[in-house]
Image (tube, rainbow, N blue to C red):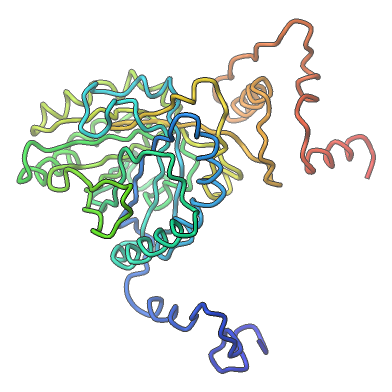
Length: 387
């Protein structure tokens, strides 16, 4: 290239070298058509790894699929992963669900925003790239899709009106939890009535004084006929609505006061049914959470997780942390508890419980049990006066 934009070939980009990427065609969709930031569509996918494959699944999803199978695609502009621990999955209701069977199935939830008006363009790309990834052995098959569908945005209701983050910020803002709610109208002709009741009456009343900053409402769309065979066709296309509640508090701390009895409220409103996913999800911790980096989940290898699973009407998730050098290891549980307590104090939140230490184990030894990454080594050396 002879300067910042122009090349010897006259096209301004590749200097006449054909590298097989056909870069000239990318100018066509960018030159016309919708290109706003409103989340006109969403991909919402709840997955359960097969027992014994949790770690391999998370390594594949975080290190490859989150990017190659999602964020690198045209018109998909935001994404985040969430996880429901066993404690959170036990909160789900009702017990019998049209979404998840059993109700505790599905512990990893991924949510993505797609630019309004670009659904068809994005679908052509996603079907093609996923077939290529599968052909190249870059798809993890030891998992079950519990609830996966592309959905069209219908409404967003805010607790604080014009103040605070908008819905297009939701997947980048450091919300502490998510509640997934799935509601079916009694019949297809009454879904519009159910939506209006939710938007104008039920959700504003529920949001007032609650820890939820906003609720986004979506309706599912059928998956294309040439979708991957391991993803089942979407159910309830004519009757269903999907609600995402974005929480500013840990869902475990506010569940009983704000998210129980939603099935009764909906059934008593205009006649609808809440499906067994009133499961809360805690936000998957990610690197640079406050800087708006990609939602990267660090799987915690807890004894409870081999049976992890849950999905349906509501859910919540939590994950680990990563330093700025991308260290993959997790600090010991005791160290994580200390870090959480310090972070909570700085934000004015309640302190995390004290770590349980074995007899004779000093706090300083906890620090030494974790091999530090480069950034920690350098910081410690500078404090000691070494370069």
